[in-house]
Length: 236
Image (cartoon, rainbow, N blue to C red; front, side, top):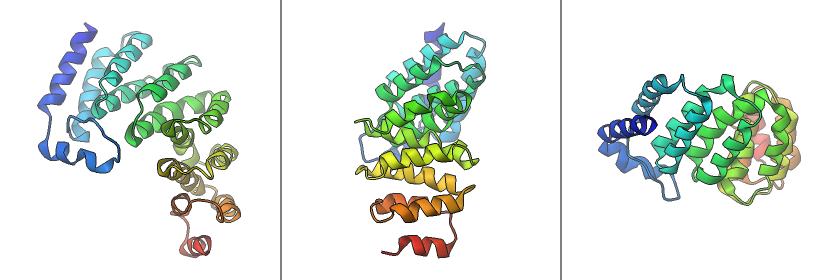
């Protein structure tokens, strides 16, 4: 039965291939990526359609389906897997962290997969179980660039609401001198979102660290600030 669901889902993805979308998909990535070439609006509809079909099943069985989708390495299937996992957020329990961490380490190999998993599934988990924040500090020291990026982007939505500012700064401290541009953009984005509710604190952090902070991170961090503050931050 489960295999039949995935067979039908994949057939709909194949039938939904748009040549222009397929040909343009790789433009947004430096690494080699795998996409059917289905428009994101249709992928979302397919995800919703088939979740209605499986939502009454045991959470563990749905997570198994998610992992089967992730094994294909297709970007669209990863989106559906992470969307299904996020749809189960009311059922999250502490042990689920290790499932999500495993997905991150085994299947996340570009920024789109990283951000989709982290912004929603992992971000929601950390809000429910903030005692797992220590795990993010460990991720920030990982040899895997996507795990390091994940340490920052998991907090994007909570930070946008003004939450976890001290933790955001702790992660930024660990990543401060990271040489990977995707990690630099990740923690710069986190600081930008934190600045919506804590502009003065983020500005002070940027000014304190701007002599060593990569310019990529700095530009991201100050993007939402007034022009005068952006000018001060960019001064050599």
